[in-house]
Length: 322
Ligand code: NDP
Image (cartoon, rainbow, N blue to C red; front, side, top):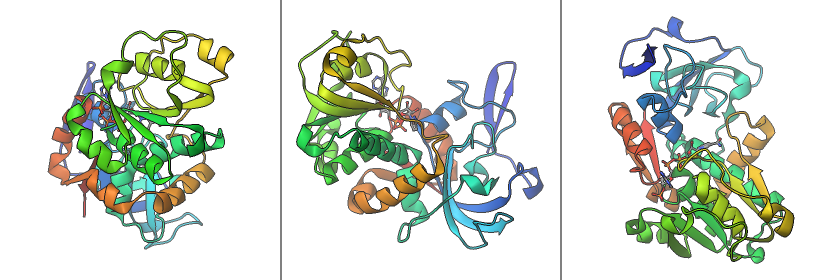
């Protein structure tokens, strides 16, 4: 699949590429599984300028098998996973079935994890893990009190709930789809609250409701999360599904010592990625992972991309490329 852009208009088409059309890199990977993340949705629909060179093969993450390598860390037959580094934005991504990338960008697929499982996690799930690790580093442990997860029924949210509940946290899930209450509780949410509770303008300080949070939404939602975080707590902010602004005040920071932890998955250093993937292989319940993911084929990518930017996708969408 190729994105093309002309006169500020963007389109995608399915076309044949040869291996020589791939961009430079020292490792070639046969993509066995990829996903449709929110960013892929933006890239395919053109709703935000995610694609920064045309033509481009979208697809920001994949798992598969190395078929050729000039990189000292990788050899033919190695199972690998890739997230970010501009793949699917400036470098040809997963939706070609073959990807040629820098070996420095790859992480070894954890033992016992299949490519389809890795992509059920995908960039959204790996980002959820980075959020959880950031909260832990900040000392937001289960005994400190509840944690809130926004955009709960989405990809980041669903994996974050599963992880946090498995680790012993009392998880409050915030969703605009209260019809998904049973789904969220099956993933491990102890409480489900309506998105509307957090979308109005935030007061400088609100009632202390949680010790921490994972926020995939931004804007008023993140501002409310901060104002309701208890003394010394922290919120890991990774998303902008509700907006890129942050209409907050400094009150939570200077009066309650609250911290805002920024999470970026794209350029995260390799050591952090390896730690996150190893943690995911241990801390994520595979039954819950299966429950939160839906598998589609290559032909379903465009429809899934449209659905995800409309907030209609539940959990994670895996694309079986095998
Ligand atoms: P999803 O679309 O799967 O999830 C987003 C969820 O946010 C939706 O399911 C919905 O949850 C909620 N939501 C959607 N629109 C709104 C709105 N207008 N107001 C409030 N809530 C809304 O996306 P992902 O989970 O894949 O990604 C979530 C966010 O995280 C995106 O903004 C994405 O760009 C970002 N992201 C950032 C990364 C990073 O490196 N920092 C990496 C990966 C993702 P519900 O229906 O439950 O309310």
